[in-house]
Image (cartoon, rainbow, N blue to C red; front, side):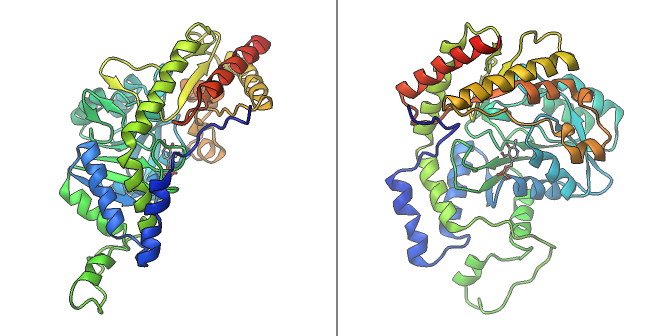
Length: 396
Ligand SMILES: Cc1ncc(COP(=O)(O)O)c(C=O)c1O
């Protein structure tokens, strides 16, 4: 058996053909393909406006700026997320308030969120993260946001095709941001998308993404008088997506249904094959939620109800041993993501200890993400399951 990677991109002739067209036409910067991708993404997510950008981190940065977040403000971010969520807040000059997670879903703990909102009036926004393809408790979070008059910007980097009560992730608050990094279900290499139903936010983000220009290059190129530069009414950034990335995005979203049904099928097979392994808590899909399975992440734990620092650290040694055995057998795994409050920069900046957000810490030390990609064969799947069973025998 060849090595089984954590993921694989799902490209075929469509991408190989389409990506050549911008190269042949010579229009390689943000142009017609980016526009087409934006339109298709808006339709897919049932949202009014979509703006493609260079990655999800820049989408989050622009989204926060468009909400008016800056120095003196605070934004709640779950600690168990990729560092980019917190970094985007800090780019604006605002401070991060870390919130713990619910270990069953890996998403924001709404009870702690409410306590934070009730005690800290400088909180201006919440950034729920729809981690691994499962929406956070967005209906409850939306109610809290209304009660406490704060804005919502969803970090839906992993939330493509994740739904809650028939509504796509990223559409519950003012803004949703997506990533097209190759670890995500649809990819453009690097790439991101911001969606919103607010025209003002859309116009602001469109302009900030393009240096603050009041007209895009393509617009200028297509009009008379394009020899003169337009006015720049804002201090912007160059966070544009290129048109060959746009071409990839168009191809990927065209076959999203196939990609997603294959991914879900494998996730369901994992659910079935692993259901009797007591030391693995499997991903759940609560009533009303549709999981996008950006990753299939389990929690390795012998006693999930009684997590203390010592117990987590002891189980962490076993989790790491388990992953090392799988690696020796050619099966790639990863920890789900990290607890950002434990990373040196954030621990020092906000003076945080591991145990301050104990569930995020447990998820960091005990999560394990299994290989998942649409073209995974039955043989590969069986091999992963066999090796996982063997490895578990060795460590528990
Ligand atoms: C939860 C989360 N937020 C943000 C990002 C950043 O996305 P990008 O790499 O597109 O900037 C990632 C990327 O993995 C992520 O997982």
